[in-house]
Length: 405
Image 1: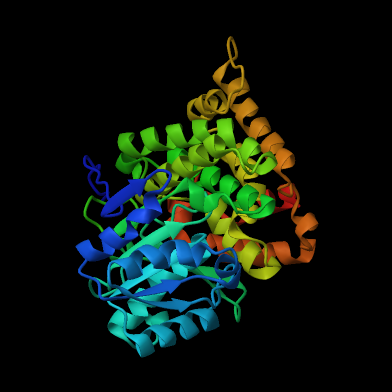
Image 2: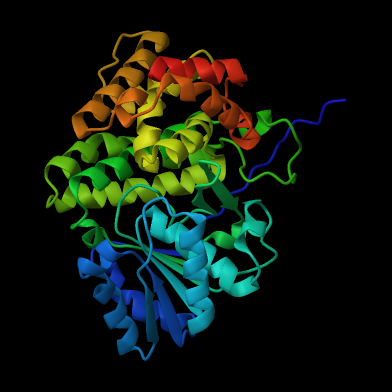
């Protein structure tokens, strides 16, 4: 017996989004609205050295909010980093937790909020829907334009023992406020800007191509972390793809171009809204074991894999890929959908080359002998293979890794 076709879809995002240059100056008012008396800023040494902690702390203290700072964050944070952050929070007992930085810091802030709220070992909350209730209020302030973590319901950590990245997903992880100030990304160096930007594109493309809400193999209301592709999410993804095509190369080559910075900040947030509803799929599933073993950034791994997975999905999403080509600025007039779809894949490959994203796994130090283990681990992440429009087997995933090697 098959489940009846789904006829409904839903949409969620951060409680409130403040966007624009100077938005961070309103964080004191935001804290006041949350009735905050003590805030913990979760960040990393580089953000602290860049003076960005003060940009957040000064408006808070001006409103009478006591500020604590944990600056022990790290790229692709491990379980050990998370434990240290949670312990710090348990000692200082903040009523509000602020994630300041890229996706790694914002995700670390989310995990910290869970651990500080409920106690116990945070690993019990890993995977989908294992957080028992609301966490302490979260505010996220991105300093990169890519992950969309400021609006998403997920947090990713690295399990160094098993060499894989793992996700915690829950609607309770959506921040109460997302403060997206393009000025806060101005000091982001070239490589993190590139990695974050291609991550935003990956989010938008995967959301746009995802298994549609009415094609998911279970009824509405089932416990599944994503809705599948739907009209609202796809509209947001389209705009994000267009903005990345217009602004990412400019941001990488001209870091003081604030118009481009603003365009990418908006692209990242829109893509975050899209993927955290419609879903991400096989690119992310394949990046988790690859990134966990090779220690590349999440965006770098996603960007490398994206064109290869697009090619795999082409038979099931030809028209959508043709549309993506146009959104990325390709001249597709007079082309068949299949030819235009090929242009989309070529455009992403050229974009990777233009911003310095590796195009082969061997460039990251991977070996061919690692690929079967990567494929086994990626195939096991069923929520992401389910959202892939052309449903892959383990052999298909291995073939994609081999093509990308």
